Image 1 (cartoon, rainbow, N blue to C red):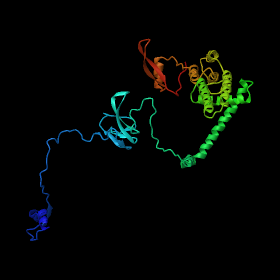
Image 2 (image 1 turned 90 degrees about the horizontal axis):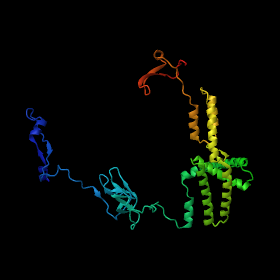
Image 3 (image 1 turned 45 degrees about the vertical axis):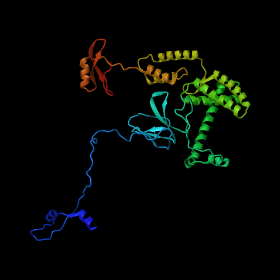
Image 4 (image 1 turned 90 degrees about the vertical axis):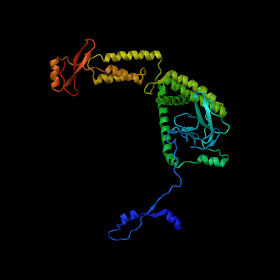
Length: 386
């Protein structure tokens, strides 16, 4: 042990004398201990240490057919030498990782022949890519409950958040159903003004259909599209009742429905504001539009435009021959009257500029081929009349 200490710990005499102040005062010198590391072998160098050698950590981390878990790295790269395929994610450094547990597959896609892909197959014998028009295999993370009692209990399980929100949701559904029924009653009353001879059953069928058409119109559909979708929904329901439940009366109800729908479409329609109105043919709508425009032109003949005239124009445009964008465009066209600026001399313009009522803007007149000084008045400033 003493030999080991002698090898590691050595006194430094000069340093000890300087630190302890030995000499003139006659004080005893104290040894300062220092640790010296003696290498038994010289550090090796490398003549290739300064070169930019290729990295050793990039490349494939999982081979084709290997079983992987979620999040495992499949391929490290810089740049997309290999592209992410099915069930595969890509990081910000182009690292490819598994998004689903399964088997690694390296493959080519017919739609991208110059790219190589890597994906995850759900089963051991599955091959990628999945055919273009085939359904995508997905893993939902659920297992089939074969016990009927456990399955029934699972159906009745409700999350706490759903349980707390259930009363409010049920109330909203009841309010929506009540509002829908109120609309149906109002439409059924209006049907009496347009169609006569409808029985209570036919009126019920027609009013329910009109409510559904009105809902499609609120979603941006045209009247023709809304009618088509409403009829297709009812027809599909009747056919499914007949096929799955063996309800033979469903086909008879479908025949009655088609007859009522044909009679209703010939008599009533919806205007752009989704209100029930009389059904017009294309020729009648075109004639109505021409007469309305002529009436508006007669109303807007005076040079001065007042709020009373604007209100008359707005009410005149509320006809089923114009949709809402056309009404707005025509209203802007016929109710806009440009302000006629007074013809002022250059001296008058300069005087108004000095008074702070406007400014002069040099403008190029293409017809006269010269620059003209145009006076532009400021808003909320009294201007001279023509």
